[in-house]
Length: 207
Image 1 (cartoon, rainbow, N blue to C red):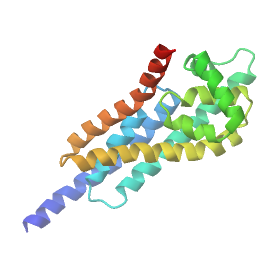
Image 2: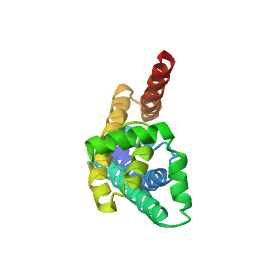
Image 3: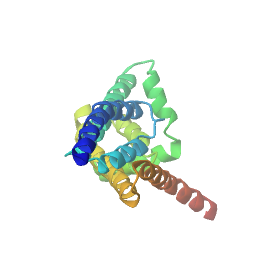
Image 4: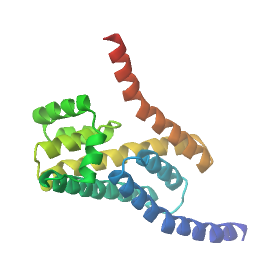
C-alpha cells in the first residue's frame, strides 16, 4: 500500500514536470539560438539530469529530440534572417548582431576552414564554444543557400545535443539527488566552455 501511495503521488508530479519542462526547454534553446546569451548547453545538461532521475520512459530521448529540434530551428531562423540582411541595402539588426559576435580573427579562421572542409566545419562549430556564430557568418558571406546550410547544421545540432546530454547524464549518475547532479552538470559545462578560451590565451601569451 505504501508503494502504491508513493507511485500515485510520484507519477503525476513527473507528468507535470514533463508537460512544463519540455516546452520550456524548447523555447529557451530556440531563444538561445536566436539571441546567443542564453547558456543553452547548461540547459540541456540540466534537463538531462532531471530526465536521468525520472522513472518515466523515453525521458532522455525526449530531451534529445526537444533540444536538437529547437537548436536546428533557431539556427535556421537566424541564418534566414541573416541572408535577408545580406540582400538588403541597409542590412538588418539580426545581421549586425551576428557580425558583432564574430571577431575578425575568428571570422578569417572560419572562412579558411569553411573553404577547406565545407560542411564538416558546421559540426565542429556547434561543439566549440563561441564557434557557431563566426562559422554562420562565414557561410553567409560565402552565400550558402539556406538548404545547404541546413543540411550541414542538422548533424551539428544532433551532435551538440548528444554532447551536452552526456554531460548531464554524467552529472546525474554521480549524485543521488537531482539538484546535486544539476550543479555538477552546470560546473562541467562551464569548464568545457572555458577550456578553448584558456587555450587561445596561452597560445597568444607564448607567441
